[in-house]
Image 1 (cartoon, rainbow, N blue to C red):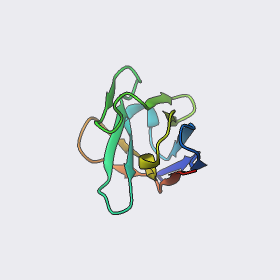
Image 2: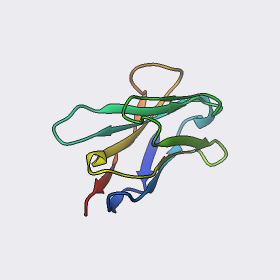
Image 3: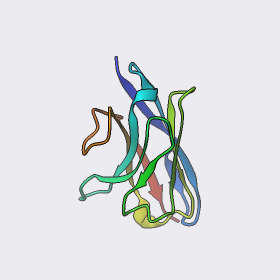
Image 4: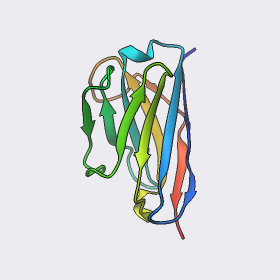
Length: 119
């Protein structure tokens, strides 16, 4: 069955960095647009970034503002989110999503990984 499994979250101090990974299985990963979202307590889930199936096009949402970088490795069926210079307001549950084509809502979601930025 389809699975998206996020990893790499945790507790980090302000200014620190994390790299999130999302391992996919159960579908043809290389055909799907992959995205990262996050949801902070009491807030709606927001799109951070999307990357085309072949990795040549990326689309960063407003919250990214150039700080985070999305990438993918189709040979490993994995999408990544590199997050440097983390701030307390980056604290959230981070989700990856997969969609066949560009669109609003993914066809598949991961279960999420918690990122907490605190001293």
